[in-house]
Length: 214
Image (cartoon, rainbow, N blue to C red; front, side, top):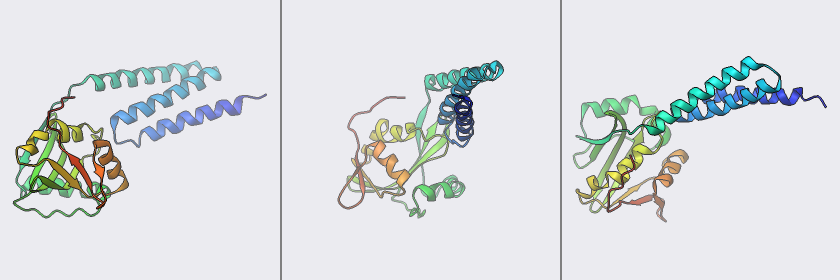
């Protein structure tokens, strides 16, 4: 039986995976998918007897493994920075990421008010996330919980909701509630521990202790 069509399929699969990896906004996902693509190309090169293809992709695989290892070993610095609801930087940030925000939370409209609590999530001193809530007794209504593309590995969200829970508790807030938003945003809410209630909103009880994972 002629195996060449099967070999070609392996080569095509490798090409598609490498091309698909380049569409990833997350650097970690890019490297993982690119690494799998390199594995396909190594297999393809060995099957057809093309040693240069196998060696080149073995090098690509090694580079991806090394960079992933560095990423996983890195201890990022996280912090919250509270700003006024009428902050000039806040307005510029929202304008710049307007399209990304509307894709995740289509109903969100920026309406600054003095009773809103606005915090940027800093990661290695870069403003990678933004949370806007309004306290209503012990509960706070979440208007926006947004992380910029390239940093959506859930670490910013976990820092805000777990390690920084005391920030909200000091303001008398013990529970957060939010509208579902898009399907992608709903997936994020469920991953973060929010629970859907009968009123169609998601709720999250802030932990009473600080959880350190970063």
